[in-house]
Length: 447
Ligand code: SUG
Image (tube, rainbow, N blue to C red; front, top):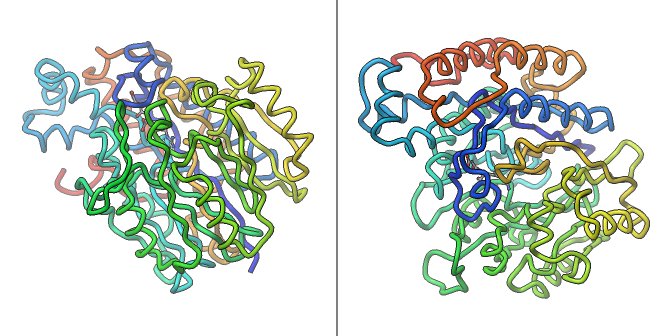
């Protein structure tokens, strides 16, 4: 069966800001309290989508979430009119207000894990929204993500939506950022590589010293079970704890795969030889493993440049492109490695560098900004068509951003009642534009 991989990019929300919320994410920590530019951030995201679309890569969008999340602040005991909720949160617990104001849903690679119909036991596409339980600002994404995915993939004959895993210790789930599907071509049977940071129950495993491991083995196992993936086609791999301690908070910061090609750093996995052997054994296709050594690019260079947080995508030519963050050009060794890669790897036809600097300053590169969904033609036809990206949607979203987004946001702006009003007006218009129905707390009955 032929199938296509569609990149669903998270649209950057109107409250995009730098609050230093993610421990272990070096960029987030470094840029805390910088002044952000939500308009530029959203435009950079849209231009990335346009660039992929122009390369002939299918593209779609996911809407941002409602922020500040007044509903969460209420759940935590703030009360009164919305304006008052924001102002008292700012006065009494500014960190809580910041966590409830992050535009972090833009990093759609963490929205969910997806299994294509070719690989699931019941022949349907499976989605499990990630619980993102490691960070409050991310954990509060799960309910809206669940509603949004259900609104876009609504046909229950083709799509199955699982509830997020219990947001408890053993089940830290960060979604597709820690999952890579390898295959001969998108429509063929795949091999699923689930990467986790630590074991939580029973088995003792190596642990990090400096930064938290966000994703657990138990969560990966549960998602593989829910998605009914044949165990003979699943590989579990633990991240090297030292890599997490060097700033690799998700595996997509240190590895990227597409179809039969897997590019990864030597320091990505704890038991790299076993992982390679198992991948080779379970793949019944010509698997190309490209292992990047410390001599090529050091772990620190990889984290600083985000070279692995790139999108490896199939082009209509039958070859692939590697879409990297522009920061890779700033590092001579990284850039020259990428030039060499194009020459040495016949599968990779071109390297494109794109500017997503606003997102990068929070540790989100091109790969973080998208959720990959492999769909057959019939499945694509049953998706909400309004989210599929084309020139017209690009034009409409660009104008929507121009009309609703600020070009400057600082911490003290998060309690501004006007920002809440502007954001809700923007999202209300967007739900119309994307034909989503009511997905936000402020649109739902009784809120
Ligand atoms: O979860 N940054 C995100 C970046 C997510 C990147 N995603 C992938 N690697 N797939 C995170 O750490 C920072 C927000 C702040 O500090 O304001 C943040 O949440």
